[in-house]
Length: 234
Image (tube, rainbow, N blue to C red; front, side, top):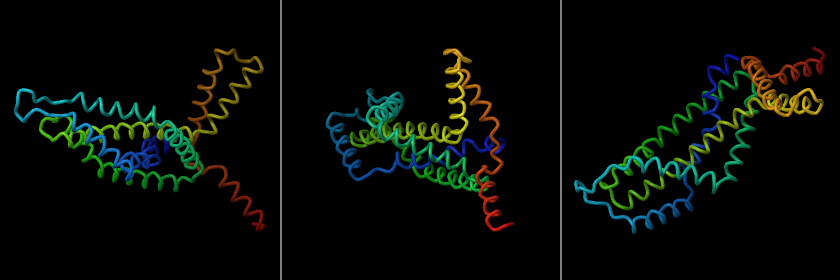
């Protein structure tokens, strides 16, 4: 299990880098929506002059924007989140089926691409946060656009969390299925009380997950190799 222990975080990042990308790359329709929201907000916003007594630093506003973006993602984009969950679970299972050299390559490629995306978009995220914190030093339109940008960032965080979680679920799908099946059969046979089913499933899943050796090739490779050898009489 050493390969997983040393590269689990990178595997998750590598498999879900598309979520970060989708959270920062806006379509033309989305850009128009952002502009419209910014204009509406600008009409209702009038920041105090720089250096005036009313000038404040709105640190809480940054957290509110990110939180609003996260909540909006859950409420209004549940379908997209379900799609992300499904795609990430499949990606995790494909990662499980890949031989170790391919896994390492995927981790490296995903890590590099994730680093590139973060480096590309981090300045925008930082600038949006700085604009909201120092709202009185910027125009109404700049502040409104920064609010929208932080909300998009919050939505991306939710997408990333969902993708990472389900990617790991996909990696351990066989163990999860076996544990759930065992718990169900144990309850049906009377060996487990209702209150014991969930703890039993958790324990069996933990044991099964810890037994996975990520340094070994998946069984299908050995089976395919033997089939080819028998086919050609070698």
